[in-house]
Length: 540
Ligand code: ACM
Ligand code: ZN
Image (cartoon, rainbow, N blue to C red; front, side, top):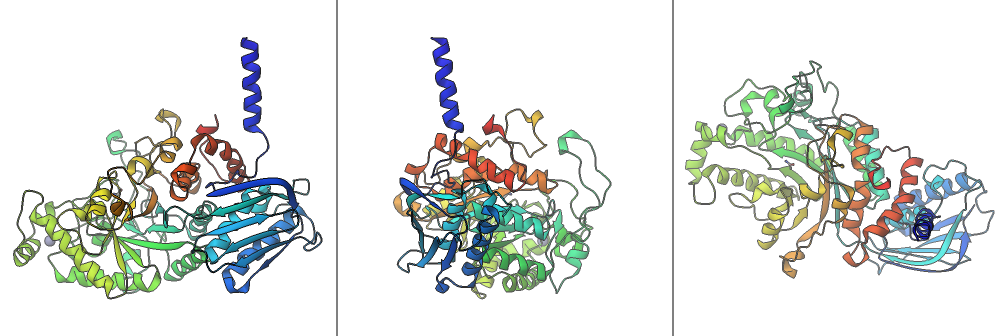
């Protein structure tokens, strides 16, 4: 009996490891109907309706080139054609793929639909399609299939913190490439924080001359008491405005919008170190050398602080075409404001008082948020803020990014505000991936394995349908205190990004963790083909 059981389990595991099937695609498409037969696409030509625009034509051309180089069959030799047809009745991110033994037909209405269809097809082909590396012996066929696909959520985001540790333009592009494979559409770029200012502001070149550089960096965690490394960090580690434009354009060509974050009025030590008059005490301040929350924040009792913010944000608005600007708002201690005569005078002028819910200083922060919202509205922009912006009184048109669990997001939706769910409990990719922390690179704490990310359901039963309609989508966050280089970043990102993509893209009835794990076998081959480091707990 025991032998029989082992035999069956071997058979099952062989099946588990067997060649990929037509739908080894992540995120899983909404509808897949497979049929008999396949289409050889070695040397296939691609024909794309020029109505899709230049970026789509270029992307399809890249796909065709890689198909030709990897299959080593000359373009057009097979006579097969992959058609990309305009279907203007489709929604922006929708697409369909119909593969018969004669041709493949993609339908979409926009660049994004074309890109998503290609990403789906790439996952149905040998992994050499990603690099164009010659693989003449691989099976260059698409299975006959009808795929109809459309995302569940319109906002599918991923944050990168470049303040604590910097990632250069090429690395940021690679990050975006990994997002694209998973059909994410929003890159949240956390550009400023206590530990470094990383974006050129023409009016204030000192921000990157002084504010980008910290004297040294804490070793390990505060509690470890290991001291500081004595090595200056951040010289030249910032993006010129030309580089910012380059990334924004690159992302747009891949269907990704970039939302910049200028975190205010807390998390501003890099700016305070540059311009001490922006603080309540006048300093001296230094660019932060440790991780955590600084008591020193912008002094918002002074008009000159608002002039500074408006000048910075004006340049930001010029650089980023996104509808949203993220203004942070998180972790802003109030102790400096309590002891500052400028801030207290402002509180008196505005008539704020402590009440049973909030202090006068919380209302002062709400005033700041509202004022920045009004300013950005003059530039045609809307604000996103972390869930602390609910404290005091939320700005009328603000979108809330819920990070301290989901409570803030639910409360905001109840107040009729749009919400992006990024609960740390499911979506913080700087948390550990294994219970046994000794086996892992040093991380922030927490425990967010792939299965936990996968299990996240953003629309809770506590919400009414009206409230649910305010949940724009889901985002994961990559905070880089303990992520010092690109390889470390890939390890924390993968495969959690793959799990996240199904939370963002798939309807609940199409989600299945066991199926996901099977499909991950092919995704891991893609990671390898791209030379990515990834955590392998789910494969063990
Ligand atoms: C945050 O993690 N402070 C948004
Ligand atoms: Zn002040």
